[in-house]
Length: 256
Image (tube, rainbow, N blue to C red; front, top):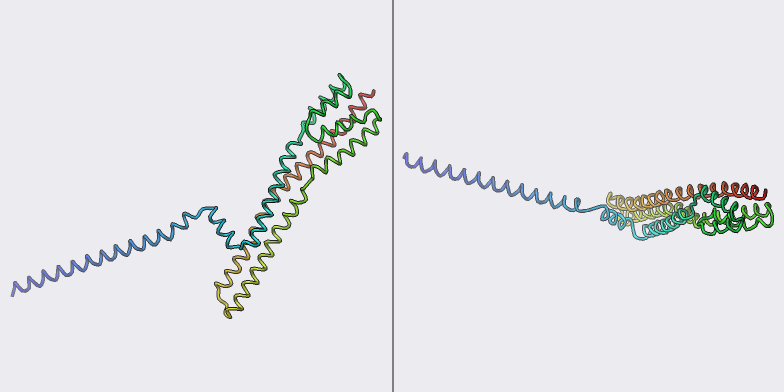
């Protein structure tokens, strides 16, 4: 009888131990599976960089309006960069130019001063040259030439700047138009489905808002470049006006 109880006790312990081992193994497998699933879900989020996210949002917004807004950004940046390069090349050291012209007038006359202006780049040097070229006709003629050629140079400085302002206004308007069209498409899907499903509404609104955001971002970027260009133009124009006054003073002193 004792032997029977011993055998039953040993069998029960073995069965309990096997059950515990199986439970632990199943628990470990489940934890491993959950961990692997979590890692698989987290991996794409970690691997998705800025460019991939931007590309994804661009595609979600629709290539139609997003492509037009992107074209506005490309053209606006191209014109802005060209203007910035041109304006930087047009910047002249006005004080140094005035000093060189004054020394040339004192040493070699008008021809020497014209040669200094001819070898100097920028609109201010061109204005100096036009004024010096009309000194034989009198101070009044030289002043008229300076004023007239100053207007010509100002037009060259402001060339194509209006296109940047056009793209600044056009980009958000295209974004808003994409928003309206996206909302219309969302309501069309709701009408076709005959049911107010959140997925239908959310998808249309998401596309609509993406076009608006992209249009506003483009407008902000171009607005920064536009303000810099306008400030640069104003600075050069002020230098041109000061240089014109300085040139007339030099011509008056030279006549005396």
